[in-house]
Each structure stands twice: as structure tokens, then as C-alpha cells.
Length: 73
Image 1 (tube, rainbow, N blue to C red):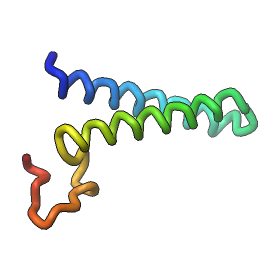
Image 2: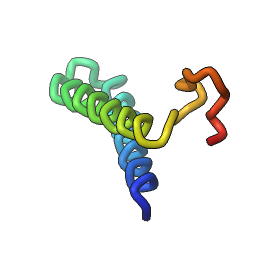
Image 3: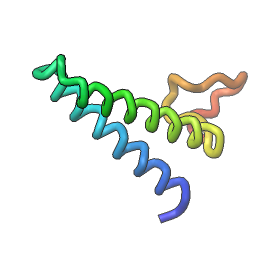
Image 4: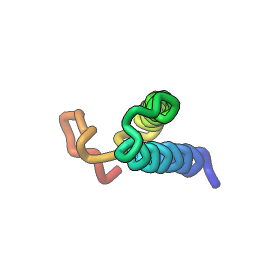
């Protein structure tokens, strides 16, 4: 697994944790521990996504900000 794939895997793990925690919070909205974990994973996911964008370009087409359409790259 190369560095790019390893970083994508970390992002997917963070996405999964966020999704599962959001589902838990839907039924346990006052659980402070779960909310703290969700916020921690949000920060981690954004950190990983920013690193990916810096090294490899946008993760999604929503993030394309250049004057040329480089999503395909």
C-alpha cells in the first residue's frame, strides 16, 4: 500500500467512525462522551483531508477550486 492509499484508508476510517457515532447520537443526543468523540473525529478527519488535499489534490469534486477542471487528475 502506497502513502496515498494509506492516507485514504485513514480518511475512510475517520468517516466510518463519524457516521457510526452520528447514528449513536441520534438515539443518545445527551451523551457527552459520544459528542466529544464525534468532535475529536471531525478534527482528525479534517486534518487528514487537508493533508490529502495538500499532497494529492481534492478528495471530492466539491473541493475543486483551480481555474482548470483537475478533478480527474
